[in-house]
Each structure stands twice: as structure tokens, then as C-alpha cells.
Length: 292
Image (tube, rainbow, N blue to C red; front, top):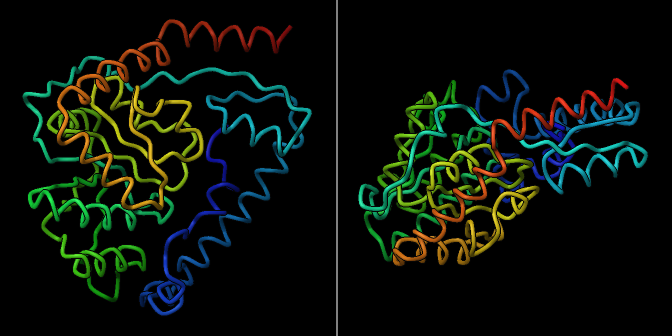
């Protein structure tokens, strides 16, 4: 199971004001008919095609309670196999050190699509700035929020507007696309990994943070709770609850013992979940069963 287009389509523009969807369109959106409304419609069409395929198959492989429920909802007769993912090799060799992390720095996720939730994160950072003026969120992926009006897309245009509206332009740093080593290095220098997405299935970035021992605070959406247990191996929050999210990040900033506990427990569960040998053998056993 990969993508779950129907779930993505349902929340594609969650949290965005209607006036932004209608009147915040960029020149490029209008010229190419690729605004957020059109993209949401296309995602729904993609979901219809995906569902037709899932209805025809007998078997699927997944990783979370969420994709199992989605698969069974679309095709009640499907046989579901569980097999966890092997992460990119770079992340297995790092170990987070609280003494080397910047106390008020967070590392986020790629955010070029509205359902990745950056518009919520901007408001959280604004809330945190009231108490921590030096708070910093690093956003990887090369989101260009300051392009000319003739070329910028509507979502980065909206984010650019929010940066000024909430006074956090200096507190959110947009990084280019990073290779695995660069991602690991940025995570290692951060106090915590921050997942603010509106929908996830098996969140790779969260898993990569956990395997390195980086404390994590994550939106409790989709399959995230299959990866992190609240107050044990991560801190979970309701995605649209700005105050709850800010409070949980504040706990990470203030409490070294909590950070070390989240780091230890997150790493332990991630090492078990993403064990290379175990997952390789599991995948082989699934294919052997299917080819009997």
C-alpha cells in the first residue's frame, strides 16, 4: 500500500481559507489551470483509479493499522500482509546527542503540498516565538516562497503571506532538497523532529528521526500512531490544535530528561521495526506464501 490517494484527497486543502483557494490563485495557476482546487479534483480522480485496482487484487502488503483499514474498506476480501520498511542505510549509523543539538531548533518535512500542513506549522512557530524568540524551524525540499508573482504557485504564495502575517519570516528557514547525509546532519543538530502533516501512512521522516534517536513530535494522523506511542516514543498532537502542538514542543525544549527518554524509546522501537534482516526475511516469506 502506497500513497492512499483517497485519504490525501479528502484533506488536500484542510485548514486553508476558502478565500485563499478562490482569490489567492497565482498567475501561473490560472494560466495552466493547476490551482489547488484543480489539484484536489485530480487527486480524487487518481483515488478512483487506485480504488478500482485495489478492488481487483487478492493480496496487498502494508505497514500500519491505517493502510490495513483503508485496504479492507475498499476491498473487504483482500488478504493483508504486514511487512515493515527498510530505511535508507545512511540513517542507521547516526546517534543523536543532546549536547550537540540546538535547544530551540526543529527539523520539519517537505512541504510543497497543502496536506503536508506547513500552514499549521507557521502558526505553531508563531506561538512558540512568544516564549522562545530564537525558535527555528528548518523546512527541507526547496519550497520557493519568494518567486515572482508570474511564476509562484498558490500554496507557496499563501505561505509567504503567512510568514509576514505571523511575523516568523526569520524563524522558518527553507532549505533546498537534501541528500540522506545532509538530512541526517540537520536532524542531528536539532532538538527535535517536527511532523506537521495532515495525513501520513507510514511516515519515513519520522522513522528516520527515531532510528537516529532524535526526539519527535508528530501529528496524530493516519498511521503515525503505529510508529510512535504518545509520551513514550514520541509526542503526538491533533494536527489542527495549535496550542497543544506548541505546548508539546515546549516540553521538549524545557525537559532534558523527557528528550532523552523519547530518544531512547524511539530508537529502540525503530531498530526493531526497521531491522534489515527481519524485514528482508518477512518479505521473502510473503512472496513464498503467494507463490505456493
